[in-house]
Length: 231
Image 1 (spheres, rainbow, N blue to C red):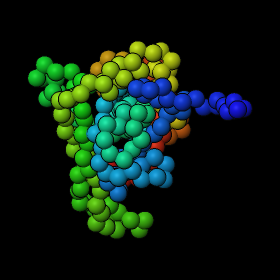
Image 2: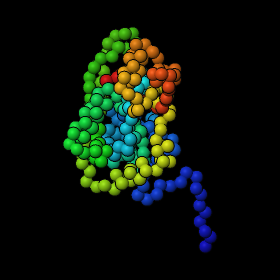
Image 3: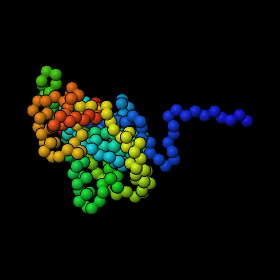
Image 4: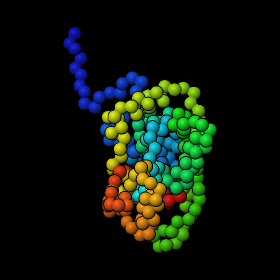
């Protein structure tokens, strides 16, 4: 019997492992529809996740300019999003504030939050937004309300740890496209962060790709179409 031909172009996922795509798989938490989306594909509103990495950014993304962002690299534990794949999403405003509240409350219990499971839920709000003629119109939009559960099984956390221990995987967890008009704040001292945010809140434009750190250093990194109002 002839041997079956094989071909290897993209490779396959090893058993009991997590895929880290060569190009970031950006997931949008759509604040207009209250659903998770990748490109034009919707993946429902339900999700629980293991978080592998969190970073703070300042800058512009989609239609939201010069604001504070949280960048979350995660693996879906439940919901309709792909499983066993590292993805990235961005949160701001109410969603980021509530995420920070949750992380601090879990830390206060003497627990590393990343050891548990994060559960974001879309919370509906009502408000007003001017139309193209300047007339205020009623709108509905969503933010993320965050919950946290202790983990009952540890296999997925062990897989996540394996991802983070591989330097090649870490090099792929950079979202250059989405952060084109952003600066990472993770290693900046508080006074430099304050100066940066104050400067761009007073009329500087971060949409031309030259968002710079105080002192002339510059860093860029992510992009995703956020069409909802800034909460």
